[in-house]
Image (cartoon, rainbow, N blue to C red; front, top):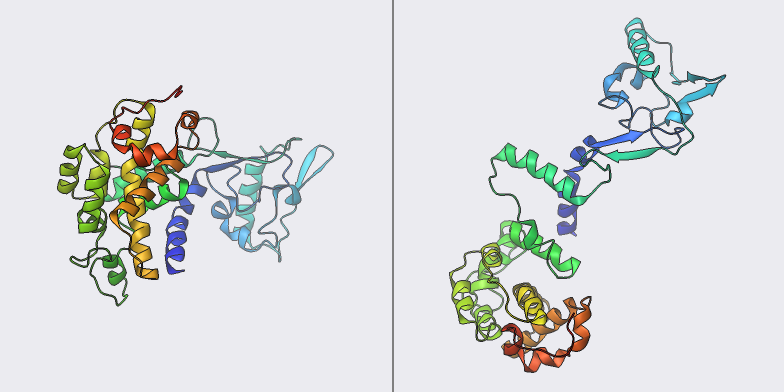
Length: 325
């Protein structure tokens, strides 16, 4: 629960930037809130005219409920709870001048995202705005490597996990201890070194056995794994795939499957006191790779047994069977 709350707390920190980049397009006013939403000018009317906003009883009222059309003109009923003071009258006059330009239409109210020309919100445009603002604020030279996470052929929940891995926020034992949890710092898989993200996924004795076995004849890759200081470094430098389509797809998904299964095995060891053999772990890795290829039409020409029995041919790009388009 604490992890979930922390996650949403981080997400909500971006909400002001999100609101800042949303503008409203007025129709006949049933949805847009008169005082709160940014529908006329560069900021909400509650910020521009705080004195009269504070004495209005319709703080959450919509534009259509506060402005009523009679004989072709809009009459504004702000529902003040008392008579206005002189300085509040000055602000009211200024507000009425702003509202002269308002015209209702027969259309529904709508919102426009100012991040891109089309006006439709996208996670990417929001991300780019945050990177631009926060990166320049704290002097970050290298933005988050989106391609390593969001453009990978893996399941959405796995993408979220790798986002956490690259940000260094996965709850390995070193992070749990930093948060005040009283536990042994020793790795759950090898019981030899302290458990950190890089150790668990790259340098743990069990992890190294898995990497050595699953990379098979491509031994140079194993040397690179030994020299990598982080998961991000490993993924960036992961070598190109070879040969056939099933070989390319399997190879590109392989590092993600290894790390994902190691995390599951680690949790199983902690919560269920179960350990798996290297061979069993490799079978599960291949199962995830096969599952992640489900949307590829060419998969129908192969069998899961191909990954189990002819793995070296697969990752060398040599396995061919029928039409693989």
